[in-house]
Image (tube, rainbow, N blue to C red; front, side, top):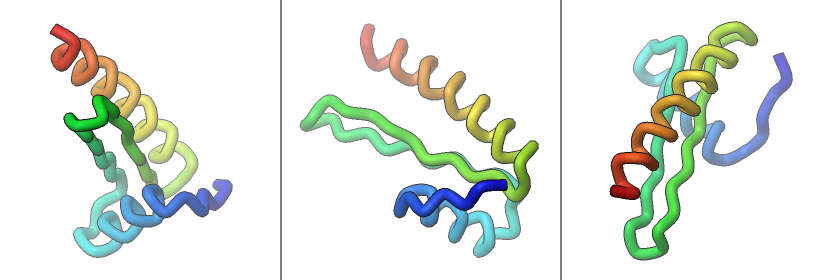
Length: 68
């Protein structure tokens, strides 16, 4: 698994370690700027892929809801 040096992914990694989780997804929404983003982390390559897939699906659902 490739190491992602992104500070946002590092925070997801830190939370996974702190709470003993194998996958973490963090959503960040800034209503003032109208932006949304996420960071995902998985303990290994397969879990990382799963976390990203879940994050992508969730991102779309949140985006669609906020765009109403």
